[in-house]
Each structure stands twice: as C-alpha cells, then as structure tokens.
Image 1 (cartoon, rainbow, N blue to C red):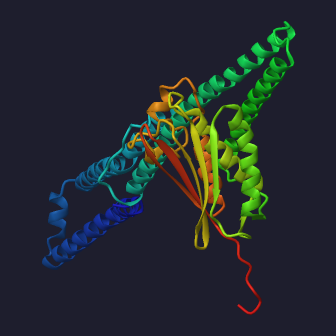
Image 2: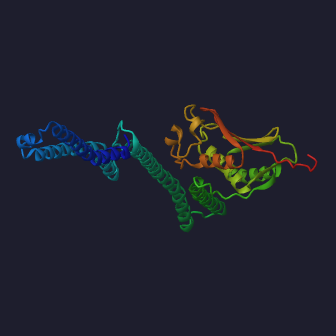
Length: 373
C-alpha cells in the first residue's frame, strides 16, 4: 500500500471517528430523552441515572481512540519506519564497501520503489567496483609487462655503450654493429612508449587520425622497404607480393596504418621459431573487389586454437607468450584492431601450431564518384 494512502486512512480515522462517536452519542441520548418525555418518565430516569454516566462514556471513547492510535502507529511504523531502517543499514553496508548486502521486499508503492532503487544502485556499484578491481589488476599486469619489456632494451643499450666506452668495439665493423644494436633497442623502447600513449586514448576514442588518399602500391612498397631493413638485420626473410590493380587507393592515416603493420610484424618476429632452418614472413596484397586484403604470414610457433579467438582482446597473452622470455604488454594487437576498425575495416587471424600464423585485415578501396552518378 502506498505511503500516501496510509496517511490518508490515518488522518480520516483520527479526525472522523471522534465526530462520529459524538454524533451517535448525541442522537441516541436525544432520542432517549424525547421518548422519556413523551411517556412522562424523564424525572424518574434522571433520578435513577448515575451521575458519572457521561464521564464513563467519554473515558471509554478515549480508551478506544488510544487503542486505535496505537494500532495505526504500529501499522505506519511497520510500513514506513522499519523499511527506512533497513535501507539505512543497507546504505551503511555500501558505505563500508560491502556491495553484497541485499534488500528484498514484497511491498509495493513508494517503499517498494525505494527498495528497488536501492538494489539497482547496489548492483551498479558492485559492477563498477568489480570493473575497477579488474582494471587495477590489468594495469598492474601491464606495468609489470612494460617494465620487463623496457628493462630488456635498456640493459642491452647499457651493455653495448659500456663496450664502446671500454674500447671493446675496436674495429669499424664492431662499432657499426654496436651502434646499430643500440639504435634498434632505442626503437623498441620508442615503440613501447607509443603503445602506452595509444592505449591511454583507446577508451576515450581520442586516437589522432589524419586521413589521406593513399596509393596502395606506393604506400606498402615504402612500408616493406622500411620493415625489410630491420628484418634483414635479424636474418629473417621477407617475401612481398602485390596482386592489387595499379592505381588502387584507400583512405587511411599513413602513420597509424604503419603502426598496424609494425605491430603485426614485431609480434611475428617475437614468436618466430628460431629452431627452423629458415624464418620467413610473407606480406601479400590481395584484391577483394571493392576492398583490398592485406595478409602478413609467418612460419613461427603458431597460436593454440583455444587462444585464437581472444588474441585481439586487451591484455590477453596466449600460453605460448606467457611461457616465453619475450614478455609483451598484451596491448599491441588490441591497438591494431582498434585502428583497423576506425578505418572502417576488420581484422582476423588464422593459425596452426608449429606451422605459423597469418594476420588478415581488410580496407575498403577509395573510388571517386562522378558528377553524373
């Protein structure tokens, strides 16, 4: 029952009942006096009537009203004050951080709505608290992974710089090797820092894009030449094939698209199987009608089938990467997916264990619309 209805009933009872009793009393006594007056027995009745009969009547009315007030107070207390006390206890539990304290009721009206609103608030706060715990755990894992990944190139840079200062690089060939290694390690650190910068902007959709019309053949040829120099220094064979018609263009951000390619290639390099006689990465451009498909395939260790659907999830690392000394932040492929989707494309992976992995992503072609179309 609604609180307003309870208050109306209480008010009517307290206001109308005394008036009703007084009216009944007045009418009964009036009729009795008229009847006695007609029979001539008024004086006899007055003489026999106890003097305190009216006092007894009004004491009885007072007791009845007191009982009614007590019953109404208990009724309102049960319907209002007890639920408010329960909700107050629930709020104290929430304030203490206990989001598992439930409040259930079969009441309807305002009180029932209050219970329902409390439960909705509790569930939302519990969900937010659980998400915060999960995010905190992931951030701790991210910090651990990034620290590991940064420590590795820093240690290498320090070692090679000490070698240069100590005169270990005593030939031009050694000096050139040491300097190139330091440069490559510095690039690795720069890539990690850039990943963190992009990661911080993913949730707020604040990744900066500068979309341009890119000639597919020219753009990817430049990318291959840049990537190829790094792979050549690591004795990794890079095969490139372009099956896209000449003059094909796409709308894309050249820097962010290059980040996609570098992340995929560096991921392939990280998990290549060094025990194989030859480590290979194949880069293919394919024509898909109104789209182009880019495939980057390696002959590395591959990804277990159970892990394949999750590799683009943030912070996910497959069993192979967890057991690897290579580390990894676990955000590289999630960044890749975000950038490709922001370009209006999509990405997926195919893999076989001990055979290799192939990353596929699709971008729509750019076609100018003529005035008469």
